[in-house]
Each structure stands twice: as C-alpha cells, then as structure tokens.
Length: 311
Image (cartoon, rainbow, N blue to C red; front, side, top):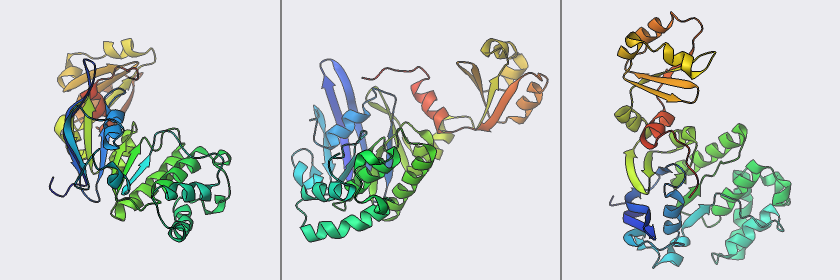
C-alpha cells in the first residue's frame, strides 16, 4: 500500500517458543478505518503495543507516516492519538485540566492548547462537565473524555483499543457517531473490538487474526459473501437443543448447506431459506429466527465457537 499511514510487514513476536504474532502484514490508508479482530489471545494487543513502540518485534517492520517504529518513536507519537482499553485519566484533574496537562507532553504552546480544549469538550459532548473530575462522570463520558484527550495533538492516526467496552447502548452509539465524524474529517483509525456490529458499522476493512496469524482481510460485506451462505435460520426448542436436533431429518439437512450447534441453539446456513422454512413449519413447537448472515457468523466460522481464556 504505497500511500499507507501505517504499514506492517512480516511482523513477528515470540515469547519463548510461543508465537504471539507471526508474519502479520497489513496497512492503513489515509481516511480509512481498519478493524483488527480476533479471539482473546489472538495477538491484537501485542500488535498494538508494537505499533506504539512499547514492544519490539522479533522480525518484520513497522512504518508509520513513512518512519520506522520504534527507531523514530518520538516523531511518530507526535502525530498519533491513542485510546487504551482502560481509562488512564488523572482522577485529580478536571476534564479541562486532563486535556491541558496531556497536551503539554507534545510541547504545544499554552495558548494553542487552551484554544483546543473548548472545541474538544464540545466534540465529546462534555462542555458542561469541563470542571468535573473523571470520578464524577459516567463510563460513557469518561470514554469520550479519553477520546477528546487523544485528539489534543490533532493526530493523523488514532489507535483505539476496544473503545466502547462496558458502555450501554446509548453511550456506544454516541461514541460511534463521534468516530464516524473523525473519519469524515479525514482521520485514520486502527480499531480493536469484540463488538461485531461496531466493526461492521465503522470499519472500511477488517483484518481477522487468530493465533497471531492473519486468516482473512477485506471489507465486511465482501468477507461475509466470500465465506458464508447468505441466509441463516436459528432454531430453538422448548426442551433445548436435543429436541431441535431430533427434528433435523434428511429433508431439512438436504435444504441446508451447513449445520452448527452452539449451546441450546442450532444454526442452519442456506442459500435460500424459503423451502427450509416451509418444511420447518410442520413443527409448531419449534421457535426460529430467519436472518441474513452477519459478521458474527463470519467471526465464529473462522475462529470457532469455543470460549478461550485470556493470554
């Protein structure tokens, strides 16, 4: 990617015999949001830490704004904005003071910093909380304050590590609206998230990794079309999954491309659901949901349904 703001090539990081990231390559173009997706322990956080110069790769290269990381870390970080997974706001300072103090790390003139604080608090919908301390804010307000703080140096590229984790639906939607506004302004974003609707809503392109390796890359809808059947029927029985499985006769299976079982739910993936729905209508006790295939289906097909431990 010739015009990439961030370019990783052959990135590898090992801890002992374990490869946490292995031969990972991708880039981010100006104005693009790229989602880095993967199960727990897939290597997402290590990848971000290497992009920030906090972890040195064992092999491969990272160039950000055309500069090598970590060799030119200081120059790169002057143009980066970072929102960590957990808040790192100073509890002793007000919202406005958090922005002011953080901005000083970039060596920005005092007058320039103070001129930016008001518009950034407006952007974060926190102008009325300028003098409040982080402990007085809701979780959504703190996340928006973290985003405003990350913008104090007017960065070209934002690295966001699960920015909406723990937020209620209203707070998440407000955060999405702010991130979409940044993309409209020409900012670039590297986003990690476990929310598939968030990834589909915000990301132009996805990089899905598992066990440290890239297993898929592309636009969300293109990946869904490439890897999945277009329609899904979810089945639930009053007596749970064994009852549903008993109804999966040869006729049902013949109309289904793929069957998956997860907990009490049976998922039927098909190219056309109407004949399947007609046959299933013979079972009045059966509860079902008919829907198009989505990004969560893709993620689970590529990475599996088994819950994994952190690490």
